Image 1 (cartoon, rainbow, N blue to C red):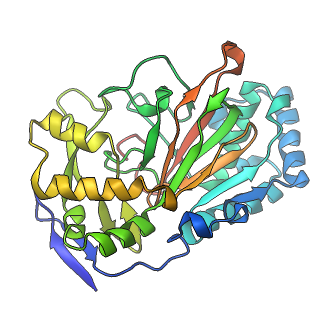
Image 2 (image 1 turned 180 degrees about the vertical axis):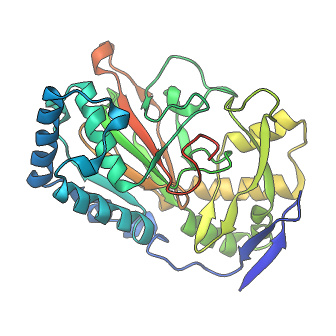
Length: 333
């Protein structure tokens, strides 16, 4: 049964479901095989990208000006179309294995990633500074309110990227250039399964997850704007949608000066315990040359803490794009 309920702070309505959600994404670790998420990159696709890079050596173009329609990318187009289908209607995680990053310069890797990402979906800004592609690497700054986790090496629970924004990305893609010396294992959990487990274990608390929670905006707001927002963790709009973050929700209550207790805290603790359940995880280490893509609204993604190489040229380095085909390209959407 679906229920329409008023959220806690406005007249807006949120559709709530009170039954088990059946989907190809409602998986548990015991049922996952490598073929669910991993697919080989064809030699035709590599050849198409090599031809593009050869053209770019003769005619320099800024990355943001590159458009797939200007090049012969038939095999790559088919590969990314299949990936999008698997993200939206299948397992929800795709790893394309692999691209020869060892013979790409970083500039070439960025061009390849931008073109492939553009075939998947429109790239959008990842900060109020208008960063369209960011480097995911440890900057040496400790994690705290206002410092986003991808700039640190600390462990991150599975979460929704940019869950505190007006328009979170639908898909998040990561292109690996170098991996860490130790650690950095990627973890994924299906929010469909998390929802079903909440219904089974805590049916009395599940409705609270459809009401709003405070979330800190992690420094990405302009002068005069509030430092926190309020969003439900779960919503339903032609499918389950999630805005879960283990860090920004408690931080949001601190920022707003509101006690995080009662039913809100109980519901958050219950869903966090389920997200942390290892029996629900799909785990692997992303290798150099692999392109990892996740459905950001239905799959929580995180990673373990890692230790970098002492060689600056071999430190863990991933490139990231956010994709959203609706709203504006700007950070707020």
